[in-house]
Amino acid sequence: MIESQLSPKLVQQAKAGGYWHSKTLLDFLDEVAPSRLDKVAVTDLNSMTGQATTLSYRQLLRLSRRIALGLAALGVERGDVVSYQLPNWWQFVALHLACLRIGAVTNPVMPIFRHRELTFMLGLAESKVMIVPREFRGFDHAAMLREIQPALPQLKHIFAIGGEGEMSFEKHFIERRWEQGTPNADQLLAERRLRPDDVLQLLYTSGTTGEPKGALHTSNTHFANIVEIVKRCGLTAEHVCFMPSPMAHQTGFAIGMELPLMLGSKIVLQDTWDAEVALQRIQDEGVHFMMAATPFLADLTDHSALDKYDISTLNIFISAGAPIPRALVQRATDRLNAHIVSGWGMTENLLVTTTRIGDSPDKVFGTDGVPMPGMEIRVVDAVGHVLATGEEGELQSKGPSNFVGYLKRPALYGMDGEGWFKTGDLARIDADGYVRITGRAKDIIIRGGENVPVVEVEQMLHRHPAIQAAAVVGVPDARLGERAVAYVTLKPGHGLTLDQMKHFLEEQRMTKQYWPETLNILDDLPRTPSGKIQKFRLREMARGENKAD
Image (cartoon, rainbow, N blue to C red; front, side, top):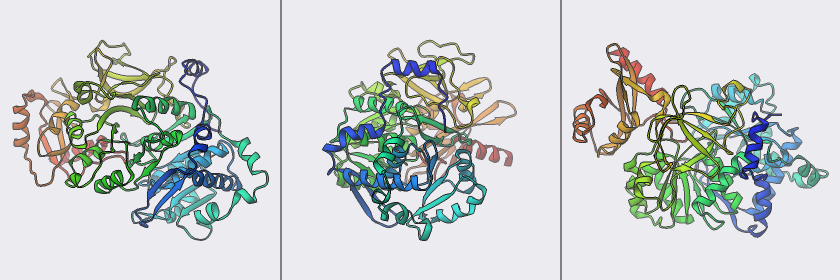
């Protein structure tokens, strides 16, 4: 049984604040589903088979019960971990509901992970069951699992969607009507059902630092955030939610799956990112609302086919996960004709801050928002002293959506006795309480004793007409201590030299000490599946190039 590491004091604080609702997703569904049974719950498009699947709430609930009983028949007990490595397909949603029904912990893992990462993750979780696609994007996931299973003594069962024989997900979970063949099925599900304070989710951090940690959440920590997002954005059951970001990431899991199911609205899924396919889905499904990281927003905004599609239903796009270039927010607002809501959050605490619909342009374009109700933020210096308005320091968060621990790694929890969590992000908070993320603590570049404002340099580079995306990292320098290296991708048909970049920064009147000394042009920046730039990989590249010099 995986236990919460929250102290009784912090549990009491969260409950006393009224932001813990003491409900699971099943409880919310019990309230809304009876009036939505014949409405669409989820529609996906499997890019491997070309098959589209649409399920009503009636069908989804029935299938989730069947899968739950199929898991129970395998010996999955309350508190056991069920892992699955699935794209954004309907089975992902049904599996999570099934885990809730039998008190199991949902552990989605990204489809990009391979032998090394999965052996570590499944071993740490002691997963009993693993479900994968037989094949996705040309890779044989079933064969990989067979290869690593001998090193995972707890992993007793492997199933593949589209698989054959004993590994067939369809034959075990879908074709067999477990609800008809299981004695006392209703009683079993009623007794095993997950409780609001039970660990709901084990989600490994997405790897911007290269070291995965298994963050633990409960229904109370999730819905403390989700309910407030619904209120802030004015969402209802009639608002269609589009999710192209992986549901194995917190954005996709909480905003793309839990939030619309809580409301009884329609989920529109996309399993591999293609901006034109996304435009088609938004048009065809009448999408109102979506959330994804900066690259998704940039690709939609700048796509050459944008004017071919009627996406007038799209009203809200929440963009979070990394500092969002101001120029992109302004351009997206104009081109998509939608409210661009900038936000900040983490796997560990969901969406902590957002701008608000109706905010002034300077807040919308220049900040990452104000805290969600119930959440608090502060900026501290290196020894923990709270800094004044406008001063840069490490951002800390506190409140009811903070996670409840890291799996088997309590020393890394990073939460003090008062509930303040060390995020590792650098930020400033203005006089109105709006935060601007200025970088990661490890992103600091100290050049000749001068701190280089990395995010400000990146923001400026994003304004260059040739640059699609930019990231700046530091490399050791014998004389200056560090120097700055810029990595950029370019818009189609554009070129850029180091001298041209420097001339642009000079025109923008940026102090010369902040200019990157090196420019590297890449086809793509290394990113996590959720779209965050992996700066540790850029630093490795920069150090390697520096040695070569």
